[in-house]
Length: 364
Ligand code: IPM
Ligand code: MG
Image 1: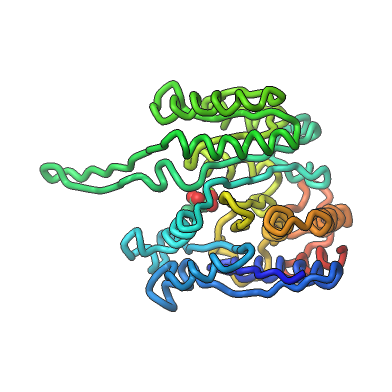
Image 2: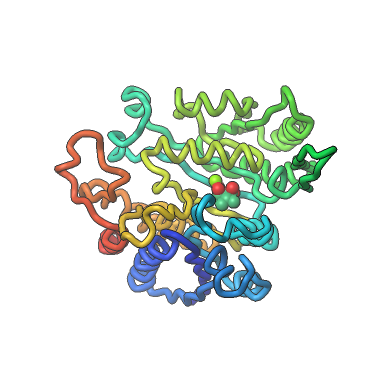
């Protein structure tokens, strides 16, 4: 079959990690007899440099014309890059937020799984790491603080900044439905995370999630306050199956969930709308400090490509093949530097970004 795949390489390590993932996609195409037509799309700092805008209307139109889009990462060093001298709506991140909003990508899925081979890289207590964990974060992606009205003004010479956190019940309902649907195919438990002891938006969140739950009697629901969830994630992550939460809480908790898997470089993500279309990206950032050195870990991007195959193209066998190849690579002791074990690192084969992509491709 022929498929149209957009690639947003982006900034920093973005081009390296998307190239490594594309090596894997190319192998999948060969092995399974598909054709992936690659269209490169500009977004982020590289788009600012080329066009003056972090995301042009042409780029949005091009993304919309694809079956799915694979993304690397965008942005630079926020203290030193000239991009951050621009007004906020002209900076690299504004491009990503605009893309998510324009495509209606309201559900962001971020699976955090501790590979048994990476137990030694897990920063948690040994007994906790030994137990392992396998959870998925479902983060609302087009509402809340990220998209509320904001402004900065001066009152009698004192600067004051305001950001607003708004959710309507429809926005909560559609992402809650996604979370319960996913839980049904997993271990049938949803933990809905909010700050209902303080925020009105969280109290509405809780009410709507309970209403949705009524259609899923086979799924267990628990509510958890976000501060407690941050703590439980490091204390006992095995208790979680599906974590459902709003945009900002999900941003923060997903970095935490990623890190306990051993490295931010392991966490993939899918951002979905009501159709089959999706934007797939690693959860980590553009890591400008290591860009261009061929040392970044492309596994999160490769696993994002696997999610693309599964969710947007319905190619389950192909997605399984990629995921199994990643497991095989880890079993074979092949590691980028961020996922070296605390002990026995000398027994591992340390590779760069490109070689890691090739190693995964070779095992498909
Ligand atoms: C993420 C990133 C983005 C976010 C940034 C780059 C705007 O941190 O995808 O988690 O906050 O959503
Ligand atoms: Mg983030």
